[in-house]
Length: 310
Image (cartoon, rainbow, N blue to C red; front, top):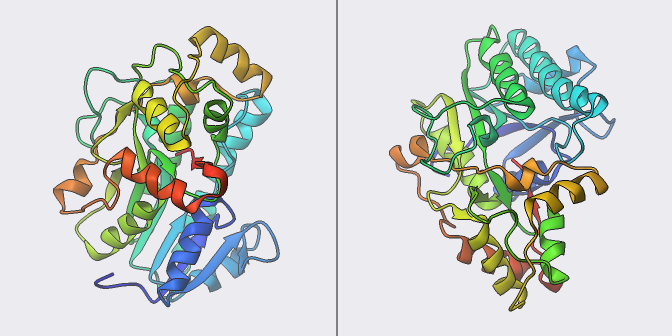
């Protein structure tokens, strides 16, 4: 960190990425304040005064709060996914408007799923095509709440791809399939898989804090996505599995219902281009999937490869 913050406020620090960031900042001697639903947090979402107090004098605010998308999109879950993102971002905006000493940067999570299913070209921040459907509606509403907030603070929406790292995650069923011999292609295997190592997520936040000219949406994905076929091949290698049975799309859709999730999480082609990051000189520590998986396997008991959905 060339110009690191002295105090960071993490909202939604109980999740996998939030937990990693908390350890990362604390290991670098940076004070971390947290916002969450429980009493263990320094401030709670329902207490406006405590939010203002925690935010006051901080340098960087990172909001990752939101219900997991690894579920069926029935009305109850869909309402929770949407409201947990919109309400927390709105409350954060109102609190920041009342802070006497506002932070330099507000970073809010978003998702690379905001772009359309793409196999023909990568989607960058300037020319990427916004898609349609529930996941896209959530992302658009989430970003709108961020950028409509009436605060004079530099803001960035992190359009995160799927985050890989040791120690936890949200789409471990993919890894579990490979471990029991079902690690072949999913669907036709041609869907793109954009991803990023969790260590690079932390480094991206450092880069954004240092580079004060960056604002607006920022894609967080390595410049080297792979197809699902290549993903599963490399996962099998990392797990020491030479073969894996393929899973047709129809079976995936049926299986998703059984385990109460959505096949979209696997079948949608996510091809995200980090043009803002690479154009501003950011260099990924783990640009290629093989090196990322090797690192994760070396840090994870029994070769499990946890990931988190972005």
